[in-house]
Length: 328
Image 1 (cartoon, rainbow, N blue to C red):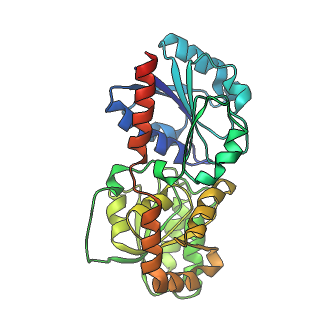
Image 2 (image 1 turned 45 degrees about the horizontal axis):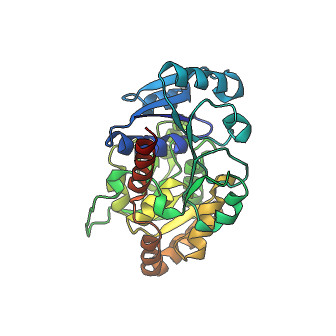
């Protein structure tokens, strides 16, 4: 069995789409499904896809590589495709030569021609998606289908708290929320120990280094660490964008402060606010939000752990494997 995955990652859009596809791909590979990624070439994509089968598209490729994607599907005799891409919709999908199409979406803002649609934000989008996909399409909706990396599922119980706050805004952080957060905390003379995480696509390193040389904040900076889950486990409070890391922190039972960095995060924000599972803040409100979260941590962590059990990728992989097997 084979499955192509069409997604992208670069310094502007970040790595969130590709990272969750990679994790799902590894789980599908355990079921003997051969995966081929189809992505536009970028330094970030190449750094993440070193050990995968990949067909790279030129950045200038027209129409998000529709023609090239069909050529690749034909060349390798791939009948099934998974798409995780905000710029692809029903007009693109109608021209695919694939027999089976899976969509990962978290916007519910455009129609799709697909056999399976996955949205991990909220089950409340069921009525919206019923108007956006064909009647035969299967829907896997809600945080129980969140794609969580294995490192966050392994119990790492410890009484040690090496850091007061953990700050991470994804693999690229194009608007540099990392530095802006530190500048604010410096202005209020924050005294706690900070664990700062930046990713492989972070291109503000020189600016950050200059700040670190001047500040009196206590900061442990980790660039593209391999022990991310351990660093999170050692931190009292997590400050992050409301993407995949929000769900990873919830699985680990950590108190969370969400800082919105993009409009596509509204689904997760709404979900966590409705469940009283995290605090939404802006950078100028970080100090009071840290104090509030520490007072509410037991309630927040208890509610957050109920949202997601971390087994979503296995549920999705089982569904896709069973479907492809039956269609063979």
